[in-house]
Structures are given as C-alpha cells and as structure tokens.
Image (cartoon, rainbow, N blue to C red; front, side, top):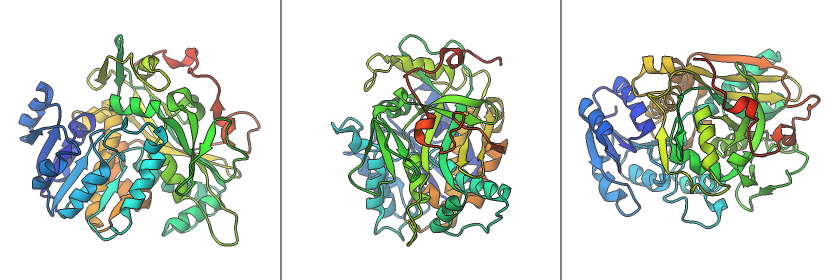
Length: 464
C-alpha cells in the first residue's frame, strides 16, 4: 500500500507521471520538490492538491529536506538531474521507503575533470558496489524510465519472439544465466535501442534555444559525454578511437568523441533504415552485462549493445549550438509539449542475429494518443512515465530486493502493466543489414563517418 509519494523534480517527467500515479494510487498523498515552482507548476500543484516544497535538493540539504517525508509506505521518485541516486537510496532505505529513478545521477557532472569518472560505466559501477550488502533492504529500482528501463524488458520479449520464429520454442528463462544462454543460442550479436522521434513542433528552436521532448539539460549532458556501448565478443577489434575501462566488469567500451559527433545506422518498422546518434546510456552497459555468458568450458559470449537515437527535427536543429565538449552557445532551454502538433515516438529494441535475421520489438506511440491517455504528456514523456509506474507496481510485489536494475525484472508482469500506455506495441522481423554483405555485424559496419546527419533527411518536416 502506497501512502505517500515524494517526487524530486517536477519538470517534464514529474508532471507526466502525475496523472498515472493518481490513477493507480488515488489515496496516496503526493509531495513535489523542485528548485523552480513557476506559475505553470503552481497551477498544477493547486489543481491536484499537492504539497509542494520550493527547494533545490543538494548534498548539504537532502537529508533535512526529505527525511521527514519518508517512512514505510512511502515512495521516493528521483526525477531531477544532478541529484545523487546513491545518497537518496541510502536515505530512503534507512527510513523503510521505496526508491525509483529514471537514470543514475551524481551530484555534479562538472565536479570531475576526467569525464570517464562520470561516464555511465563509472556511475553504474559505483552503484553496483553500493548495492552489495543491501540485498534485503527496501527495493530501490534504478535507471527505470523508458530507456534505460522498459527497453530491458522488451529485450527479453524480443528474445522469446525470435526464438519462436527460429523454431526453438524454449521455456522462458528463469534467471540471468538462462537469458544469456538463450541470446547465445540465437547468436545475437547486436542489440540496438532504436528510437526515431518524429514529433513535430514547427517554429522551434529559436536562436540559441535548445528544444527537446524531454529534459534539455539531461540530453545536452549526454550529447557532450563520450559515446559508450556494450562491447560484443564477436567484435574483431576496437574502433580506432575506442578505449576500454581499467576496472569493473569490462562489459563496455567508450569512444574518444562525444555522442553528438557519433553516428550509426539503425532500422525501425516505420522508417526503415535511418541515421542516428550513438548517445551514452546506462542500458547499453547493463543489457550487455546481463546477457554475458561465462559458462565454464565455453568462450565468453556478449552482444554489442548501444542506443541509436534519432531525435526530433527541432532537437537536431538545436544540436548546432553544441561544441564538442561544451554548450556555450545555448542561451535557453525548452521542453516541447503543447507546441507539438503531430508525430510519434517509435521506440524499441532491434536484436540482430548472425543466423536468424533480426527482430524489432517496440512502441509506435503517437502524441495524439498520449494526450488522450494522460494530460501533461507527449509520446516521449508517457513512455517514461508509464515505465516508472509499471516499475513501482513490480516493487510492491517485490518489496525487499535491495538495489535492482531493470534487467532483473520479471518481463511478463512489467510489460503487461506498461503495454496499454505504450500501445501500439509491435514485433517486426527483418533481414536488414547496415550495408550489403555485413554479415559479421561488427560495430564498424554500423558506424558512420562525419559529424552531421545527411541534410536530405535531417530537418525536413513530415506532413502532419
């Protein structure tokens, strides 16, 4: 039973998840905490009879501000950038409360001169170390938005779908080793989290403005970080600018260039082949490690995993204000919501086998359907918000699991809880290859040279 929900960060996702929380737990009190409570947010607070705390959560005040709100029956949702996940988990668990976030956050992305120390690989490595010894404490679900998050659930569903098409019809694996063995048996070499966001907001961005369908601040940070990807056992060699980490599981590598300067080929059922940006994400590492097979007597197996993102035309135009490692020309930020006129966010997972072709499993949620299902939403935000709500339902059924990643969730119940919001969900099989004859599916077959998306396809608006 949820009695109190505390939302840290009442921005795009915080507002989007509000109607879903009220529908699922109508008797729960809701408190929102944010450094900005402008007129629009105050109107929502009044309309929904929320309790609000106007404060920036920092390392100095988080305990004094949040501890009085927490206890058994409470949920702490950390949806703010640069609010440390580990510190908030420790606080929540100390008071018997649940915790969930959409991404692992540090206190300050600019606090360390070495970008690798604040990479997703490093943040996840530190989270896993923190989690040891907490296995029976109140459940804290980390990095469980749409991606990272529900895409890890979709990977399991896609594996079962491809196994059925291949005539294998295996029983559903019961643990991590079983899922890794199934991926190996299917010869899965590449897992792309493939997203093509065609939502349109004509007239944006304005000069110096960074427009996005979710946190502009968060996406700018991801764009400027090194591109990261889970590194498969089938890969013949590191890319010329690739490097390994000298600690941890070794499941991932990074490239010595930012994500917004790294492009790859991808595929989706609606758009077919398309160019995308390889943006660093937690799921690139967690999925790769989850599907690593290290059984005795066999060579190591692991697929290559990465996020291939084609953002809206407005966001792509905004990316012109980014330098390689800084954003000095960005003078303002805008979250696109009411400005969007049409389009959909096609988000799924593309699993490519060396023997059985490929399968794409995902969502084609339109902005019109998202608005009809829940106010304050776009297709992008509703995919994230519904993943959070589905994760919270799973946590209530699994209340003492310590710190948990999305990859460990039971995919059937979680996908069932989210399916209504993500619909239409579809499974599509394809023989697409990144280039003719690229049957080895090496990463360099997908990697594109140059920094810009082809102008004939990048910014031309589609008809609404």
